[in-house]
View 1 (tube, rainbow, N blue to C red):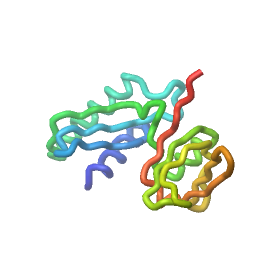
View 2: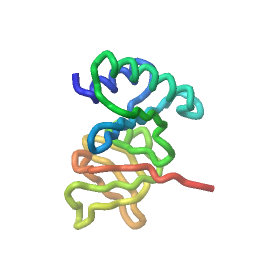
View 3: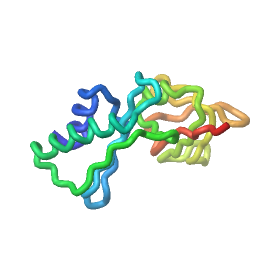
Length: 146
């Protein structure tokens, strides 16, 4: 079983959502970002500790070699990766970077309209655009501060 599958199975089994995984260049540090969509206020320190303890034991059993494990909430500028996330965060401001340019642009920022049939809707200042989900290299929510 590969590391991502192992993490997804374990984190969802504990009742959390696996948002993202980052590995240091040599794989010595593993960063795991979790969310608890149903929980008011999101992920807290106790949630991170619970997941960390479980993954530490699991990595020992599975002989996964690492130096440091970090568990974190996704933050206000969370990564948006899954099609379901693009639907879930409709109505929020987002930055999107494409692999292949759309109308000679790779970077977009606007209001997320959602995701249907493999297309992500985005409202820009002057127009709405539809971007291919499979062409998105990375996407992050843009937090609003009052």
